[in-house]
Length: 490
Image (cartoon, rainbow, N blue to C red):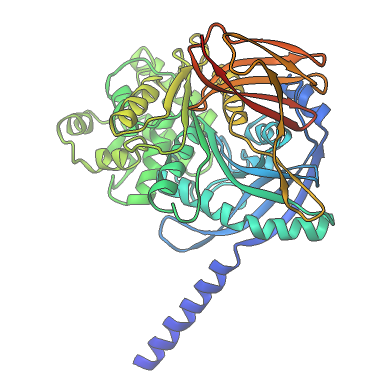
Protein backbone atom coordinates (compact mmCIF):
# COMPACT_ATOMS: atom_id res chain seq x y z
CA UNK A 1 0.00 0.00 0.00
CA UNK A 2 2.78 2.43 0.92
CA UNK A 3 4.60 1.58 -2.31
CA UNK A 4 1.44 2.24 -4.31
CA UNK A 5 0.92 5.63 -2.61
CA UNK A 6 4.54 6.52 -3.31
CA UNK A 7 4.13 5.67 -6.99
CA UNK A 8 0.95 7.77 -7.21
CA UNK A 9 2.70 10.68 -5.50
CA UNK A 10 5.73 10.36 -7.77
CA UNK A 11 3.50 10.25 -10.84
CA UNK A 12 1.64 13.39 -9.73
CA UNK A 13 4.92 15.20 -9.10
CA UNK A 14 6.20 14.21 -12.52
CA UNK A 15 2.94 15.35 -14.12
CA UNK A 16 3.11 18.69 -12.30
CA UNK A 17 6.73 19.24 -13.28
CA UNK A 18 5.89 18.43 -16.89
CA UNK A 19 2.96 20.84 -16.93
CA UNK A 20 4.96 23.56 -15.18
CA UNK A 21 7.83 23.15 -17.64
CA UNK A 22 5.49 23.54 -20.62
CA UNK A 23 4.92 27.23 -20.07
CA UNK A 24 3.34 28.01 -23.43
CA UNK A 25 0.86 25.54 -24.85
CA UNK A 26 0.05 27.29 -28.13
CA UNK A 27 0.02 30.59 -29.98
CA UNK A 28 -2.38 31.81 -32.65
CA UNK A 29 -1.86 34.72 -35.05
CA UNK A 30 -4.89 37.02 -34.81
CA UNK A 31 -4.03 39.90 -37.12
CA UNK A 32 -1.94 42.98 -37.76
CA UNK A 33 -2.26 46.75 -37.88
CA UNK A 34 -0.13 49.39 -39.55
CA UNK A 35 1.25 52.34 -37.65
CA UNK A 36 -1.09 54.59 -39.68
CA UNK A 37 -4.13 52.56 -38.61
CA UNK A 38 -3.11 52.71 -34.95
CA UNK A 39 -2.37 56.44 -35.16
CA UNK A 40 -5.79 57.06 -36.69
CA UNK A 41 -7.60 54.92 -34.14
CA UNK A 42 -6.03 56.60 -31.11
CA UNK A 43 -5.56 60.09 -32.60
CA UNK A 44 -1.90 59.81 -31.70
CA UNK A 45 0.18 60.77 -34.79
CA UNK A 46 3.57 59.64 -33.49
CA UNK A 47 2.98 55.89 -33.51
CA UNK A 48 6.25 54.36 -34.67
CA UNK A 49 5.68 50.70 -35.59
CA UNK A 50 3.33 48.33 -37.33
CA UNK A 51 2.24 45.47 -35.06
CA UNK A 52 1.19 41.84 -35.21
CA UNK A 53 -0.84 40.30 -32.39
CA UNK A 54 -1.35 36.78 -31.09
CA UNK A 55 -3.44 34.81 -28.63
CA UNK A 56 -1.17 32.79 -26.36
CA UNK A 57 -2.35 29.89 -24.19
CA UNK A 58 -0.06 29.02 -21.30
CA UNK A 59 0.05 27.22 -17.97
CA UNK A 60 -0.36 28.70 -14.53
CA UNK A 61 -2.09 27.65 -11.29
CA UNK A 62 -5.57 28.36 -9.96
CA UNK A 63 -6.42 29.71 -6.53
CA UNK A 64 -6.39 26.16 -5.12
CA UNK A 65 -2.79 25.76 -6.29
CA UNK A 66 -3.71 23.26 -9.01
CA UNK A 67 -2.40 23.44 -12.62
CA UNK A 68 -4.54 25.63 -14.85
CA UNK A 69 -4.54 26.87 -18.44
CA UNK A 70 -5.15 30.50 -19.33
CA UNK A 71 -4.88 32.85 -22.28
CA UNK A 72 -3.49 36.28 -23.06
CA UNK A 73 -2.61 38.67 -25.86
CA UNK A 74 0.88 39.44 -27.17
CA UNK A 75 1.41 42.50 -29.38
CA UNK A 76 4.69 42.55 -31.31
CA UNK A 77 6.16 45.75 -32.82
CA UNK A 78 7.41 45.09 -36.34
CA UNK A 79 11.07 45.93 -36.90
CA UNK A 80 13.72 43.23 -37.00
CA UNK A 81 16.50 45.79 -36.51
CA UNK A 82 15.29 46.88 -33.06
CA UNK A 83 15.53 45.53 -29.52
CA UNK A 84 12.27 46.16 -27.68
CA UNK A 85 11.41 46.49 -23.98
CA UNK A 86 8.62 44.38 -22.52
CA UNK A 87 5.38 45.78 -21.09
CA UNK A 88 2.71 44.04 -19.02
CA UNK A 89 -0.76 45.57 -19.35
CA UNK A 90 -3.47 44.38 -16.94
CA UNK A 91 -7.02 44.84 -18.23
CA UNK A 92 -10.11 46.26 -16.54
CA UNK A 93 -13.31 44.57 -15.40
CA UNK A 94 -14.70 42.06 -17.92
CA UNK A 95 -18.43 42.02 -18.54
CA UNK A 96 -18.36 38.53 -20.07
CA UNK A 97 -15.90 35.63 -20.21
CA UNK A 98 -14.55 36.72 -23.60
CA UNK A 99 -14.47 40.44 -22.86
CA UNK A 100 -10.70 40.16 -22.56
CA UNK A 101 -7.68 41.27 -24.62
CA UNK A 102 -7.04 38.05 -26.54
CA UNK A 103 -10.69 37.80 -27.66
CA UNK A 104 -11.47 41.48 -28.13
CA UNK A 105 -8.47 43.12 -29.75
CA UNK A 106 -10.32 45.20 -32.31
CA UNK A 107 -13.46 45.95 -30.35
CA UNK A 108 -12.19 49.15 -28.76
CA UNK A 109 -11.52 47.67 -25.32
CA UNK A 110 -8.34 46.98 -23.40
CA UNK A 111 -7.04 44.69 -26.13
CA UNK A 112 -6.94 47.63 -28.51
CA UNK A 113 -4.88 49.57 -25.96
CA UNK A 114 -2.19 46.93 -26.43
CA UNK A 115 -1.95 47.95 -30.08
CA UNK A 116 -1.03 51.49 -29.03
CA UNK A 117 1.70 50.36 -26.64
CA UNK A 118 2.98 47.92 -29.25
CA UNK A 119 2.97 50.64 -31.86
CA UNK A 120 5.11 52.78 -29.56
CA UNK A 121 7.81 50.15 -29.33
CA UNK A 122 6.82 47.97 -26.37
CA UNK A 123 6.50 44.20 -26.72
CA UNK A 124 3.17 44.11 -24.93
CA UNK A 125 1.72 41.13 -23.06
CA UNK A 126 -1.83 41.23 -21.69
CA UNK A 127 -3.03 38.37 -19.43
CA UNK A 128 -6.73 37.49 -19.61
CA UNK A 129 -6.71 36.41 -15.88
CA UNK A 130 -8.00 33.22 -14.27
CA UNK A 131 -11.51 32.19 -15.23
CA UNK A 132 -11.63 34.39 -18.35
CA UNK A 133 -10.71 33.81 -21.99
CA UNK A 134 -10.01 30.10 -22.49
CA UNK A 135 -9.72 29.45 -18.73
CA UNK A 136 -12.38 27.38 -17.00
CA UNK A 137 -14.11 28.04 -13.72
CA UNK A 138 -14.84 31.28 -11.91
CA UNK A 139 -12.89 34.50 -12.26
CA UNK A 140 -11.37 35.59 -8.92
CA UNK A 141 -12.26 39.26 -9.36
CA UNK A 142 -9.79 41.75 -7.82
CA UNK A 143 -7.92 38.90 -6.15
CA UNK A 144 -4.47 40.42 -5.87
CA UNK A 145 -2.33 37.29 -5.59
CA UNK A 146 -3.70 35.55 -8.69
CA UNK A 147 -3.67 38.76 -10.73
CA UNK A 148 0.05 38.91 -10.00
CA UNK A 149 1.05 35.28 -10.56
CA UNK A 150 -0.92 34.94 -13.81
CA UNK A 151 1.01 37.93 -15.19
CA UNK A 152 4.31 36.52 -13.94
CA UNK A 153 3.59 33.16 -15.59
CA UNK A 154 2.82 34.88 -18.88
CA UNK A 155 6.19 36.61 -18.67
CA UNK A 156 7.78 33.23 -17.98
CA UNK A 157 6.07 31.91 -21.11
CA UNK A 158 7.41 34.75 -23.25
CA UNK A 159 10.64 32.95 -24.30
CA UNK A 160 8.49 30.12 -25.64
CA UNK A 161 6.43 32.61 -27.62
CA UNK A 162 9.56 34.27 -29.00
CA UNK A 163 10.81 30.90 -30.20
CA UNK A 164 7.41 30.23 -31.80
CA UNK A 165 7.38 33.68 -33.41
CA UNK A 166 10.84 33.29 -34.88
CA UNK A 167 9.98 29.86 -36.28
CA UNK A 168 6.65 30.83 -37.82
CA UNK A 169 7.47 34.41 -38.80
CA UNK A 170 10.97 33.60 -40.03
CA UNK A 171 12.46 36.69 -38.40
CA UNK A 172 14.22 37.41 -35.13
CA UNK A 173 12.46 39.06 -32.21
CA UNK A 174 14.79 40.85 -29.82
CA UNK A 175 13.92 42.07 -26.32
CA UNK A 176 15.98 43.81 -23.65
CA UNK A 177 15.81 43.67 -19.86
CA UNK A 178 13.43 46.59 -19.47
CA UNK A 179 10.00 45.76 -18.04
CA UNK A 180 7.12 48.23 -17.76
CA UNK A 181 3.89 47.56 -15.87
CA UNK A 182 0.51 49.24 -16.14
CA UNK A 183 -3.24 48.67 -16.14
CA UNK A 184 -6.57 50.48 -15.81
CA UNK A 185 -9.42 50.03 -13.30
CA UNK A 186 -9.23 46.38 -12.15
CA UNK A 187 -6.00 46.43 -14.12
CA UNK A 188 -4.73 49.27 -11.95
CA UNK A 189 -5.26 47.03 -8.93
CA UNK A 190 -3.65 44.10 -10.78
CA UNK A 191 -0.63 46.10 -11.94
CA UNK A 192 0.05 47.35 -8.42
CA UNK A 193 -0.29 43.79 -7.11
CA UNK A 194 2.09 42.48 -9.77
CA UNK A 195 4.68 45.21 -9.15
CA UNK A 196 4.53 44.56 -5.40
CA UNK A 197 5.05 40.83 -5.79
CA UNK A 198 7.88 41.31 -8.28
CA UNK A 199 9.79 43.47 -5.81
CA UNK A 200 8.95 41.33 -2.78
CA UNK A 201 8.79 37.76 -4.13
CA UNK A 202 10.39 37.59 -7.59
CA UNK A 203 13.11 40.25 -7.38
CA UNK A 204 15.72 37.76 -8.57
CA UNK A 205 13.65 36.94 -11.65
CA UNK A 206 12.24 40.28 -12.84
CA UNK A 207 13.10 43.94 -12.43
CA UNK A 208 10.55 46.67 -13.08
CA UNK A 209 11.79 49.70 -15.05
CA UNK A 210 8.74 51.88 -14.36
CA UNK A 211 5.11 51.36 -13.37
CA UNK A 212 1.86 53.22 -13.89
CA UNK A 213 -1.31 52.38 -12.01
CA UNK A 214 -4.49 53.90 -13.43
CA UNK A 215 -7.78 54.48 -11.58
CA UNK A 216 -7.66 51.27 -9.58
CA UNK A 217 -9.34 50.12 -6.31
CA UNK A 218 -6.05 49.76 -4.43
CA UNK A 219 -7.67 50.16 -0.99
CA UNK A 220 -10.38 47.51 -1.13
CA UNK A 221 -10.32 46.99 2.64
CA UNK A 222 -10.77 50.67 3.50
CA UNK A 223 -11.82 53.09 0.72
CA UNK A 224 -13.99 50.65 -1.24
CA UNK A 225 -15.44 49.06 1.91
CA UNK A 226 -16.31 52.45 3.38
CA UNK A 227 -17.93 53.52 0.11
CA UNK A 228 -20.38 50.64 0.44
CA UNK A 229 -21.01 50.96 4.19
CA UNK A 230 -21.52 54.72 4.03
CA UNK A 231 -25.06 54.31 2.67
CA UNK A 232 -24.29 56.88 -0.01
CA UNK A 233 -25.66 56.77 -3.56
CA UNK A 234 -23.40 54.64 -5.75
CA UNK A 235 -24.56 53.61 -9.21
CA UNK A 236 -22.45 50.45 -9.58
CA UNK A 237 -23.87 48.04 -7.00
CA UNK A 238 -23.02 44.94 -9.06
CA UNK A 239 -19.36 45.26 -8.05
CA UNK A 240 -20.30 44.28 -4.50
CA UNK A 241 -21.69 40.77 -5.14
CA UNK A 242 -19.16 40.28 -7.92
CA UNK A 243 -16.36 40.82 -5.40
CA UNK A 244 -17.90 38.86 -2.53
CA UNK A 245 -18.68 35.84 -4.70
CA UNK A 246 -15.10 35.94 -5.95
CA UNK A 247 -13.66 36.01 -2.43
CA UNK A 248 -16.01 33.24 -1.26
CA UNK A 249 -14.56 31.02 -4.00
CA UNK A 250 -11.02 31.91 -2.95
CA UNK A 251 -11.32 31.86 0.86
CA UNK A 252 -14.41 29.70 1.38
CA UNK A 253 -15.49 31.24 4.71
CA UNK A 254 -17.35 34.44 3.90
CA UNK A 255 -20.91 33.05 3.91
CA UNK A 256 -22.99 29.91 3.70
CA UNK A 257 -25.56 31.25 1.24
CA UNK A 258 -26.18 34.45 -0.66
CA UNK A 259 -29.26 35.05 1.49
CA UNK A 260 -26.98 35.42 4.53
CA UNK A 261 -25.39 38.40 2.81
CA UNK A 262 -28.11 39.96 0.66
CA UNK A 263 -31.73 40.82 1.29
CA UNK A 264 -34.49 39.95 -1.14
CA UNK A 265 -35.19 40.67 -3.94
CA UNK A 266 -31.50 41.39 -4.45
CA UNK A 267 -30.31 37.89 -3.48
CA UNK A 268 -32.43 36.29 -6.20
CA UNK A 269 -31.10 38.64 -8.90
CA UNK A 270 -27.52 38.04 -7.75
CA UNK A 271 -28.05 34.26 -7.79
CA UNK A 272 -29.29 34.48 -11.38
CA UNK A 273 -26.11 36.36 -12.35
CA UNK A 274 -23.99 33.78 -10.56
CA UNK A 275 -25.71 30.99 -12.49
CA UNK A 276 -24.85 32.71 -15.77
CA UNK A 277 -28.33 34.00 -16.64
CA UNK A 278 -27.06 37.50 -17.36
CA UNK A 279 -23.79 39.42 -17.45
CA UNK A 280 -22.37 42.04 -15.11
CA UNK A 281 -23.89 45.02 -16.91
CA UNK A 282 -27.36 43.49 -16.84
CA UNK A 283 -26.93 42.64 -13.17
CA UNK A 284 -25.98 46.22 -12.43
CA UNK A 285 -28.99 47.56 -14.32
CA UNK A 286 -31.30 45.20 -12.48
CA UNK A 287 -29.85 46.04 -9.06
CA UNK A 288 -30.06 49.77 -9.70
CA UNK A 289 -33.71 49.44 -10.72
CA UNK A 290 -34.54 47.29 -7.70
CA UNK A 291 -32.82 49.69 -5.30
CA UNK A 292 -34.62 52.68 -6.73
CA UNK A 293 -37.97 50.85 -6.61
CA UNK A 294 -37.55 49.49 -3.09
CA UNK A 295 -35.29 52.01 -1.33
CA UNK A 296 -36.01 55.20 -3.23
CA UNK A 297 -32.42 55.59 -4.49
CA UNK A 298 -29.43 53.49 -5.42
CA UNK A 299 -27.75 52.99 -2.05
CA UNK A 300 -26.00 49.59 -2.31
CA UNK A 301 -25.62 49.12 1.45
CA UNK A 302 -29.36 48.48 1.56
CA UNK A 303 -28.91 45.29 -0.45
CA UNK A 304 -27.04 43.84 2.54
CA UNK A 305 -28.61 42.16 5.53
CA UNK A 306 -28.78 44.79 8.33
CA UNK A 307 -27.22 42.42 10.86
CA UNK A 308 -24.28 41.85 8.51
CA UNK A 309 -23.76 45.60 8.13
CA UNK A 310 -23.53 45.97 11.90
CA UNK A 311 -21.10 43.05 12.14
CA UNK A 312 -18.86 44.50 9.43
CA UNK A 313 -18.78 47.87 11.17
CA UNK A 314 -18.12 46.39 14.60
CA UNK A 315 -15.74 43.51 13.91
CA UNK A 316 -12.51 44.21 12.03
CA UNK A 317 -11.84 40.46 11.99
CA UNK A 318 -15.07 39.44 10.34
CA UNK A 319 -14.09 37.08 7.46
CA UNK A 320 -15.34 39.58 4.86
CA UNK A 321 -13.25 42.40 6.34
CA UNK A 322 -10.22 40.10 6.48
CA UNK A 323 -10.67 39.09 2.82
CA UNK A 324 -11.07 42.71 1.73
CA UNK A 325 -7.88 43.77 3.53
CA UNK A 326 -6.01 40.77 2.14
CA UNK A 327 -6.52 42.25 -1.31
CA UNK A 328 -5.21 45.71 -0.55
CA UNK A 329 -2.22 46.33 -2.80
CA UNK A 330 -0.78 49.67 -1.63
CA UNK A 331 0.94 48.98 1.69
CA UNK A 332 4.54 48.82 0.45
CA UNK A 333 7.20 51.11 -1.05
CA UNK A 334 8.00 50.70 -4.77
CA UNK A 335 11.65 50.93 -5.70
CA UNK A 336 11.00 51.55 -9.39
CA UNK A 337 9.58 54.92 -10.50
CA UNK A 338 5.78 54.81 -10.29
CA UNK A 339 2.89 57.06 -11.22
CA UNK A 340 -0.70 56.83 -10.00
CA UNK A 341 -3.04 58.40 -12.54
CA UNK A 342 -6.65 59.18 -11.57
CA UNK A 343 -9.58 61.55 -12.06
CA UNK A 344 -11.23 63.31 -9.12
CA UNK A 345 -14.71 62.92 -10.63
CA UNK A 346 -14.37 59.13 -11.03
CA UNK A 347 -17.84 57.71 -10.40
CA UNK A 348 -16.84 54.04 -10.09
CA UNK A 349 -13.50 53.97 -8.29
CA UNK A 350 -13.20 56.79 -5.73
CA UNK A 351 -10.07 58.86 -6.28
CA UNK A 352 -9.21 58.49 -2.58
CA UNK A 353 -7.79 55.06 -3.52
CA UNK A 354 -4.98 56.88 -5.31
CA UNK A 355 -4.32 59.36 -2.51
CA UNK A 356 -4.21 56.66 0.16
CA UNK A 357 -1.84 54.58 -1.98
CA UNK A 358 0.51 57.49 -2.64
CA UNK A 359 0.62 58.68 0.97
CA UNK A 360 1.20 55.17 2.33
CA UNK A 361 3.94 54.39 -0.19
CA UNK A 362 5.77 57.63 0.54
CA UNK A 363 5.42 57.08 4.30
CA UNK A 364 7.01 53.67 3.84
CA UNK A 365 10.02 55.12 2.04
CA UNK A 366 9.15 55.33 -1.66
CA UNK A 367 11.13 58.15 -3.27
CA UNK A 368 9.69 58.27 -6.79
CA UNK A 369 5.92 57.84 -6.52
CA UNK A 370 3.58 60.59 -7.67
CA UNK A 371 -0.13 61.01 -8.21
CA UNK A 372 -1.50 62.93 -11.21
CA UNK A 373 -5.12 64.00 -11.63
CA UNK A 374 -5.24 63.74 -15.42
CA UNK A 375 -8.73 65.26 -15.74
CA UNK A 376 -10.56 66.44 -12.61
CA UNK A 377 -13.91 66.45 -14.42
CA UNK A 378 -13.75 63.02 -16.08
CA UNK A 379 -15.77 60.05 -14.88
CA UNK A 380 -14.31 56.54 -14.83
CA UNK A 381 -14.83 55.84 -18.52
CA UNK A 382 -13.60 59.24 -19.69
CA UNK A 383 -10.54 59.03 -17.44
CA UNK A 384 -9.08 56.08 -19.35
CA UNK A 385 -7.84 57.99 -22.40
CA UNK A 386 -5.87 60.75 -20.61
CA UNK A 387 -4.54 58.22 -18.11
CA UNK A 388 -3.21 56.01 -20.91
CA UNK A 389 -1.65 58.96 -22.77
CA UNK A 390 0.07 60.13 -19.58
CA UNK A 391 1.28 56.60 -18.92
CA UNK A 392 2.71 56.39 -22.41
CA UNK A 393 4.53 59.71 -22.04
CA UNK A 394 5.88 58.64 -18.65
CA UNK A 395 7.17 55.35 -20.03
CA UNK A 396 8.75 56.97 -23.08
CA UNK A 397 11.00 58.84 -20.70
CA UNK A 398 12.54 55.51 -19.70
CA UNK A 399 12.03 53.38 -22.80
CA UNK A 400 15.19 52.12 -24.47
CA UNK A 401 14.71 50.69 -27.96
CA UNK A 402 18.11 49.45 -29.06
CA UNK A 403 19.43 48.59 -32.49
CA UNK A 404 20.61 45.23 -33.73
CA UNK A 405 23.86 45.21 -35.69
CA UNK A 406 25.14 42.38 -37.86
CA UNK A 407 26.49 40.79 -34.68
CA UNK A 408 23.11 41.26 -32.95
CA UNK A 409 24.62 43.72 -30.46
CA UNK A 410 22.59 46.72 -29.40
CA UNK A 411 23.65 50.11 -30.70
CA UNK A 412 23.28 52.93 -28.17
CA UNK A 413 20.81 55.77 -28.54
CA UNK A 414 22.12 58.43 -30.92
CA UNK A 415 23.53 61.66 -29.55
CA UNK A 416 21.32 64.72 -29.82
CA UNK A 417 23.14 67.87 -30.92
CA UNK A 418 22.51 70.53 -28.28
CA UNK A 419 24.27 73.84 -27.50
CA UNK A 420 25.22 75.77 -25.45
CA UNK A 421 25.65 73.26 -22.65
CA UNK A 422 25.52 74.31 -19.80
CA UNK A 423 22.81 76.82 -20.62
CA UNK A 424 21.26 79.68 -18.68
CA UNK A 425 17.84 78.90 -20.16
CA UNK A 426 17.95 78.73 -23.97
CA UNK A 427 19.55 75.96 -26.05
CA UNK A 428 19.51 75.06 -29.73
CA UNK A 429 18.83 71.55 -30.97
CA UNK A 430 20.43 71.04 -34.38
CA UNK A 431 20.65 68.39 -37.09
CA UNK A 432 17.18 67.07 -36.29
CA UNK A 433 15.97 64.39 -38.76
CA UNK A 434 12.53 65.90 -39.37
CA UNK A 435 9.16 65.90 -37.60
CA UNK A 436 9.30 64.29 -34.19
CA UNK A 437 8.34 64.29 -30.53
CA UNK A 438 10.43 66.14 -27.91
CA UNK A 439 10.62 65.43 -24.19
CA UNK A 440 12.54 67.01 -21.32
CA UNK A 441 12.89 64.96 -18.13
CA UNK A 442 14.52 65.72 -14.81
CA UNK A 443 16.98 63.35 -13.14
CA UNK A 444 14.10 61.58 -11.32
CA UNK A 445 12.49 60.69 -14.64
CA UNK A 446 9.65 63.19 -14.29
CA UNK A 447 8.37 64.63 -17.55
CA UNK A 448 8.88 68.41 -17.43
CA UNK A 449 8.28 69.41 -21.05
CA UNK A 450 6.45 67.56 -23.79
CA UNK A 451 6.22 68.84 -27.38
CA UNK A 452 4.24 66.51 -29.63
CA UNK A 453 5.26 68.00 -32.98
CA UNK A 454 8.66 69.49 -33.72
CA UNK A 455 9.43 70.21 -37.37
CA UNK A 456 12.55 71.26 -39.21
CA UNK A 457 16.21 70.58 -38.55
CA UNK A 458 16.60 73.17 -35.75
CA UNK A 459 14.58 73.84 -32.61
CA UNK A 460 14.91 76.49 -29.91
CA UNK A 461 14.57 74.79 -26.51
CA UNK A 462 13.39 77.10 -23.73
CA UNK A 463 14.21 75.77 -20.24
CA UNK A 464 13.84 79.09 -18.45
CA UNK A 465 10.72 78.01 -16.55
CA UNK A 466 12.59 75.12 -14.90
CA UNK A 467 14.78 75.16 -11.83
CA UNK A 468 18.56 74.80 -12.13
CA UNK A 469 19.76 71.23 -12.49
CA UNK A 470 20.50 68.36 -14.86
CA UNK A 471 17.92 67.40 -17.49
CA UNK A 472 17.59 64.72 -20.16
CA UNK A 473 16.42 65.84 -23.59
CA UNK A 474 15.00 63.17 -25.91
CA UNK A 475 13.82 63.44 -29.49
CA UNK A 476 11.71 60.66 -31.06
CA UNK A 477 11.32 60.37 -34.83
CA UNK A 478 10.59 57.48 -37.18
CA UNK A 479 11.14 54.87 -34.47
CA UNK A 480 14.54 56.27 -33.44
CA UNK A 481 15.73 58.18 -30.38
CA UNK A 482 18.24 61.01 -30.06
CA UNK A 483 19.23 61.96 -26.53
CA UNK A 484 21.53 64.27 -24.61
CA UNK A 485 21.93 65.73 -21.13
CA UNK A 486 21.85 69.44 -20.49
CA UNK A 487 22.83 71.42 -17.41
CA UNK A 488 20.64 74.41 -16.57
CA UNK A 489 22.68 76.93 -14.58
CA UNK A 490 21.85 80.61 -14.15
